[in-house]
Length: 88
Image 1 (cartoon, rainbow, N blue to C red):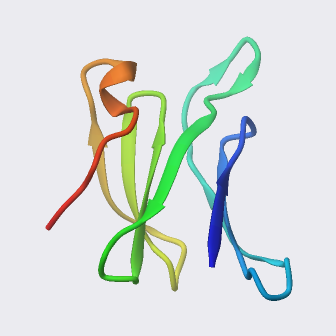
Image 2 (spheres, rainbow, N blue to C red):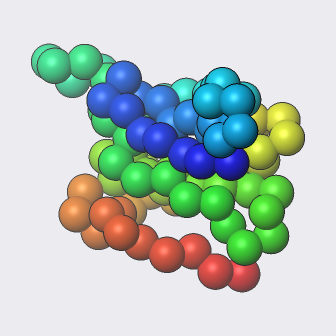
């Protein structure tokens, strides 16, 4: 699978063989004058069952089967979330 992020506040998982979207993660956040908070980063975690997204100053861990948020972390500043790594 491949992942993409968007200015519309979503991260998407894609089947690379078919090119079809298989999961859409809606990263809720406050609405700004230009729209929703964009998702700036997404990455699968080593266990293969979860992924993390970053939007604004919020990092979320998602279950890739259900599409539900497993954990959420609020970071003190927006730039603290960019390029962060999660390990367990």
